[in-house]
Length: 251
Length: 241
Image (cartoon, rainbow over all chains, first blue to last red; front, side):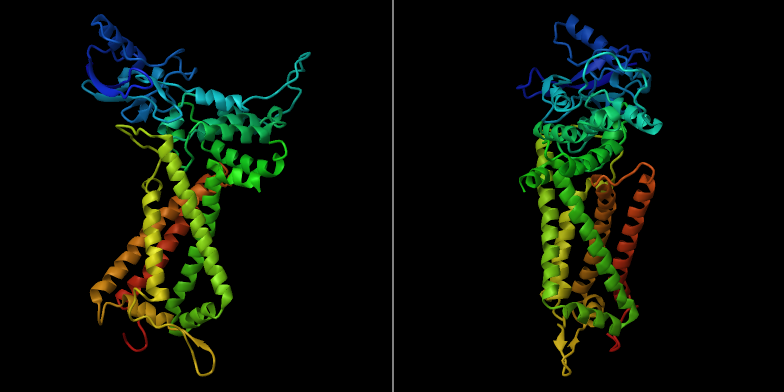
């Protein structure tokens, strides 16, 4: 199939950037979207032009590296699919596609379709962990956890930190990402000692990074490749309110 | 106090200020509508209700100033949040295809200011009187009892007879349009508020959303019915306005 691509090209963080149009001809429907871009890049390189930069790593939909907007939809908008797992059979011959990087003040564009997501790392560093004493290993299953809590914690833990939530949110809010980390740990017994300190520190770091707020549009969850529920945001709000009472002396 | 200011100034804190003030205003809108629906019980009932409210004296002003403070908190937090939102995405997308958001949720920043303009008009129209030349204020009767003319005022405001028919027709249309926008605002607001306050539960989420829609519909229909009922002549004064 043959496609027309309008791609955001930006030489570096300080470059203004612009859209450029490329023809992607002879694309196989079995290619993933990233393989299609590899194909386009090979042609660009053979012509002595700079290839389109995009972030990628595992190409199995689990590392969270890849992701950009395809026609105004994060990861192309296919349910539970990252852009590396999106295949060209989802498109038609002659399609015209607009490719844009995630747009958020907290995600500065490094080059073309690649953004700097280290703001997510800073949020996790602020409290997205549990402190444990090392020593001889505990018996497996020594701590009982209810099945429902395990399931909800696991659903939240599925977040790969790709940034599609921020990109899709009309306010560029990182509440779904931050909420997923807070809920994942806050639902488990191991996460309890630091629960209220965690929610305060992580949401404060989120604000400082320059992300917007949540107005419950639900776009984040609708475009999340791991289908993280909006409920993690409600839990974050609840925990932050509880932290004003329970965790204030710690903060 | 410092911890509270820090909390209220955070994005989640500002959202909670907006949600709590929104909840209180939502309650006021329901109460206000129930009071106004007494127009269907006749002039005597509605006028007595008006006299009771006006007879509250200083307490009335406490309520009014309280409402003003709540409105200011609601507007203040929304202004702060909209500024944050613009700062968080300085460069917008060339193309966006929303999937989960609704018309109501995307137009909160438009419906809010229009509803505010309506509230100001409504106060000048049916309370203060600057926008309603025929408004009759309450008077103290010979027996010392307060006598109000709420029913007469509502009828003269929307009745499409007599002088200023065009202005009255405009009033009816503005009231109905404002109430539909208020409905959109509350439809998303009520649902969003439940989530912001962390009260949502996956088990009740659909019920919460349906309930928010149902209450909003009742408010829109209830409030819109009054100017329409007067305009079509279903509600009239004994004098035969």
